Image 1: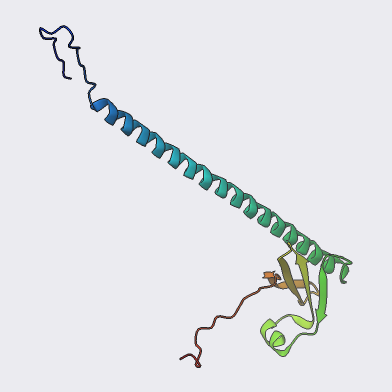
Image 2: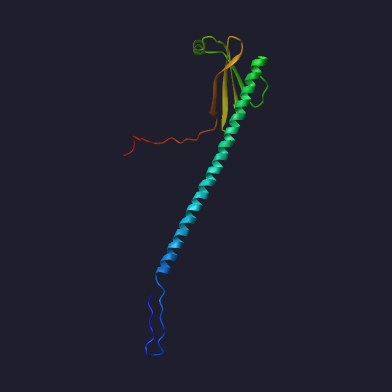
Length: 164
């Protein structure tokens, strides 16, 4: 801080200069506040995306478990009644076993296989295949989630022999 004392001339004013340190501290504080605001905005955005994805995963998991429970109910109805239930949302197929199924099954009666699908959502379904065992009960031989959504894939041109 620089202070000028008045001299003999009474018209001369006292000049006080503010220290430049005050401006540096202010700029540093503003910079820190901007950084904190930016980090909080990025964190909020990331948290919102995680929140939305977790709900989407939860909805998909819930739909899968509902379809799996329905498939188990259909299996128990088939084992109890010995015939296919009348379910309007599921698709049933009865097929004869192939030679491969007869060889691979060993102790099972492969005269008739039953396969059915249970819709999970608009893009997937649960496919179940059953086979009779010695006790005339049906056992699950395949229980898998299948994608039924259309894929619109454009072929890639990796090599063109006519290129010059």
